[in-house]
Image (cartoon, rainbow, N blue to C red; front, top):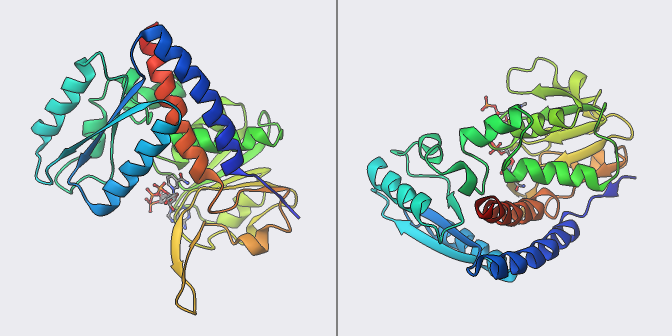
Length: 287
Ligand code: NAP
């Protein structure tokens, strides 16, 4: 039976370390570590998410400011705001809430965030630094997956690692970070012909697709370490809603050596990595 990797407990440890360091930085800088988030078109879901972020920041001593721009804000308006934030010395971190309204291109706007203030690690320059093995600030979900793997003590160096899902935000950066840590990495995607043939070889299996039960016991090697990044809301036959990952947890748990639950695995750790990246931005700016 797999040992659960407790993302909530590990995230709490990260938050405590971040809190101490934020207090030191605040004393050293004589001003707060300051994260500004930009939300274009304030939906109820977006504002709830921002409120949770504000609470998470507050708990570790990070000042949080939310700038809400109108739904019809054009590219120039959002760009101007990002430029102001780049130039504002009081702002140590910037993030752009996704999804954006359809008329805006997320990559184009993320590209304009100063890479040092880019707390989500989404500026192409930051992805590029990961490729060159000189990581400045990496994407939060990818960092979360790596931290959870490291917490088990299973060596990454030399391991057969398979990542399923190849998005810019999750799968690809996870594959890059695993390769930076010297795993032998296979990146599976929608065009992969025989998914199970690849995943069955994995000592470390990371799944980031968004499809419940994509990974069954047949896909998993005995004794594998399984990280489930997926978050899916499903409706059970009795009509109740439930959050599940991409892995058929009940079927895979007996076969794996380690597994992340959903919820309580990658999710809380991703939030903790955002806080850690926000601290890192302030540290980089203070050098
Ligand atoms: P995404 O942008 O939709 O990417 C999913 C990726 O999986 C795409 O590359 C897609 O390829 C690929 N894919 C689709 N079907 C596949 C299949 N059958 N086999 C292999 N690959 C397949 O989603 P995302 O943003 O990466 O998120 C993935 C999941 O992780 C979602 O459930 C999301 O909610 C969750 N997530 C969780 C966290 C967290 O903190 N825990 C953070 C971010 C995301 P195509 O694009 O070619 O279809």
